[in-house]
Length: 405
Ligand code: PLP
Image 1 (cartoon, protein in one colour):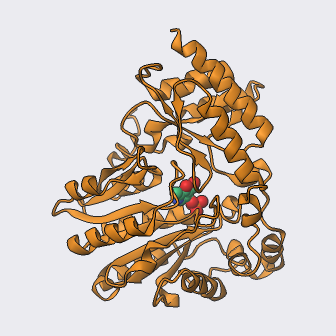
Image 2 (cartoon, helix red, strand yellow; image 1 turned 90 degrees about the horizontal axis):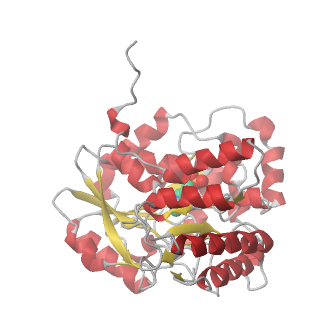
């Protein structure tokens, strides 16, 4: 029989966070092994519960949530998102500029499919959250990775961005706060990125899904609040700030220079209509989530669970000889570097697999984030301090033997 092949469109699409190493971990769990998982930023599975009032709103409204809603989302939810954009100083956002989706993930793909013709280029950070690269490639585009400099706290390298612009470049993506590095971008840098976008007429896509997960009283600026003459699409949602990743609820907000983007916006509207609407029950939680008390801040205080876990994981990792790591200012991840002189890794997926098999610890290799060398890996610091201590101890043990090979 003729083999059934997947579409050629998928040939270069890659999402290693849920790749072959995770598959092996699943098999091991079925065989009865206990794996410590430092691989996925899914707060609820580590005892970070969704705030009760959000849950209650979803439950109370469930009987009214069986029908489709407007393709862009429920009125009250979009109104709350509109108010949130006002709080974040993003100017002139109307209800019609807001698209609610099944998580940011769906909207990223939708935004790329509405934009790209074959061969169009999009500037994407390196390392990235790999959904962005995958969405560009799936949509026929070319992902051009610009360097984020580890030495400068993982900030985007503006010269590299400029050097990678061609007549085919359509947009630049920034992930701020950043996954996987934990970097938070200063306003001066955001203004420089805007200036580049202005000069080359690029859309700025800003993934800000971690904008409330900030440590040491850091503050976040939405890049879209800093200019009105560039087109911005800003992404956020319930998955991280509100620990409700399983609700699959996110949004995209179009702002800035919308007049010249009418055709693109019509494309977004069409794709949003084609998928009818996003999951309705979870949209009933959005208004409650965005208003009132923001319990995420309890977790990021020095006494809060997230900040304590960040500190434990960072300290233990950087105590390992040959391991260095930027201390995250935001988000849920550490992206340590393994000194290649000490740990000459050639294939970091193999490295992650060996760590899993030998120590039952699951991480994601740096190349899974489109990082250029096999010398980094990502650790999620959502597990409790005891599990993190145990896991990093096992990583240290593994590395000690790895050196002697
Ligand atoms: N953007 C970034 C930077 C992420 O880290 C994630 C999930 O880890 C997403 C988007 C996906 O978010 P959602 O759950 O809303 O689809």
